[in-house]
Length: 177
Image (cartoon, rainbow, N blue to C red; front, side, top):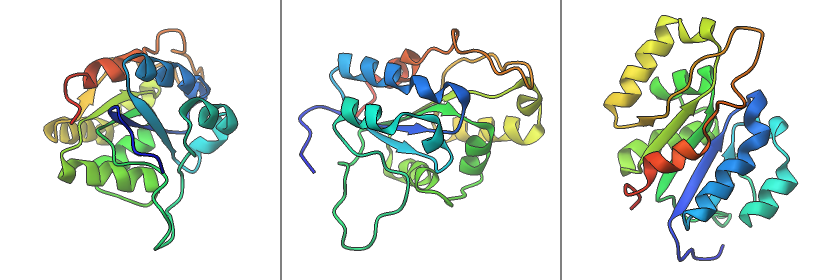
């Protein structure tokens, strides 16, 4: 593990159709003088080009817990961006569930005071669910910053052109430790 000289941003990637565009967020972070490490949910791994992402960041993608005694492949984060953030991840995170590495990192980030920004990506039927609204309230109450996103029609996907990857970095600038 090399020691970063610039702020280090964790990007948590969830399983959504637009996750294959994650390189856009990494590019913006690099342009803002941040190093980046990617943590993918187990299902999110199947939505991204892992070789391309690792080449772009210079770090391995993390998705599973490391064994005791194994070196830490990423330095500690100065901030975290969750993009795209799915219905499942947002609700589990708000409930304090840590059944994946990504959720474990997000749950610890609150107690460590790590600034976190989220770009939700879900459909309108999911967004209408009361659990989602409660999760947004809880996470906002924890200081989590949210980008704007208009949920797409169910079974239609969408929002790819309107998804503002750069918004995650904009929300975090000036808040990194």
